[in-house]
Length: 409
Image (cartoon, rainbow, N blue to C red; front, side):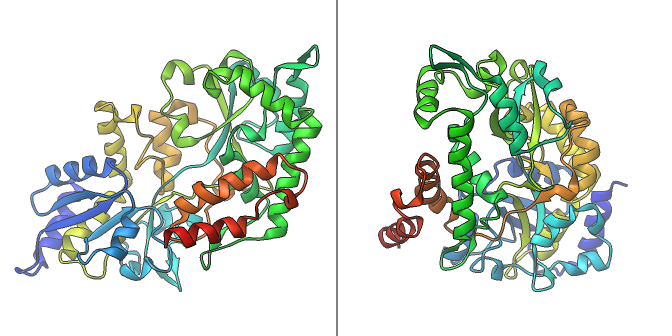
């Protein structure tokens, strides 16, 4: 008898006759419709119905109806976590493999000493480069700012005072600027609405500006190169040898076409033994007002099994889903054995390249409208500040956020 059948027989025996055997799952990841179909077909006791929302956390706050399960991003904010019930009993009775989870990701879902949320998936930033340049790098797994700068400086080529080859510019990607700020311990976090370390932010942006001036001559020189050559995607420019590095997230890297990815290598961006995880890590929670708690629990227990996730990856590969969505729920699995042992079977490039567990640094708890704040206020500020020697010349981040809040609340 399969694990899922055993679980469901157990739950069904204790299930009240008036309790619905169909549970509603809200998510911002379309892959969960496929996972629910697999669960539904594998047993006859319960059904999972999936509803997709761009921001299920916001839907929880705004809706008068409640799902049984939520799988999504931004579930840890103060206004959202109140909807979930503790899951500690599943650890105590050993129906969930607590030691299989990445410990720091699991800790993020622990609030006031109780486990409300379980990590489903995560992503991390990488630098990619042409495979024939791998011998230049000192570490087979990670790369830091100093090495990026040094190798980029050696790679740069000038012709009549104009760059024909440029190793890397931090200004090419505003998300790289955000990663830099994160690694400088700027510590963006939920407040009213957002708090951060202003001095650390200034140090990070001064570091970027000095990087440009020291390695790439000037902001203008970088802009001229970008205008001339960036009609091709950065990954193609790295593959062709026009640039040395470009930044990308792991979920984007592993859905690049095979003919592109086969010519590229990568390293995880790390400073002081920290790899900053993307803020949009996926978590699962069971709601307090669930009308189908047994069905919801059955799905959760089924999903967080190594063998289940291995079969999900197999079925995703057979249905060609891995060509458009990385791994489990668009990222590495929150279960360490799955990411470390199962993923390399489906993504051979990960062999010998897994991010060290102790380096993984989850994002802070962020406010409910973080996505809009980041896109409308923070990233434009970082882009402008990175090209100027002092913050006095840039419209302050605090004012940008205040303006946005006034217009959108």
